[in-house]
Length: 166
Image (tube, rainbow, N blue to C red):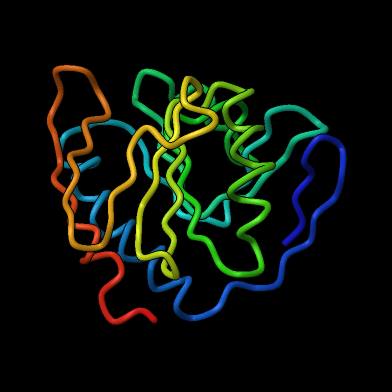
């Protein structure tokens, strides 16, 4: 997989089995909630997110609210999705935690989630919390995701995402 960030090309190896399993678990929790409540579209990668020609990424999961469906194009998403989810591996940690986090904040991604199986946590950043996550939930904890103000909410147990993952 090749991504372009600030005009530089970054190539990543194909994700491993555990990475894909965690992506599937996150998708499996969010997708029914998003669909059942008519919130928008959850897209599992590979999906291209094009901020402009010098910034094209392929996150693990992307959520776009219904009222912003016009940013969905033939090639993927054209602009800042409402939520981007990356599952970190040792090969992608530096890129995900630093450069991508900064670029996503720069382009106005409302929430950037990093699921880190090694740290056994989920961290969520917003454009206002560039230096420290707005929320950091460890494997034994639960957090509530509410993608629309005054909308439905989903309780997520982080342990469910990371169960049996080393």
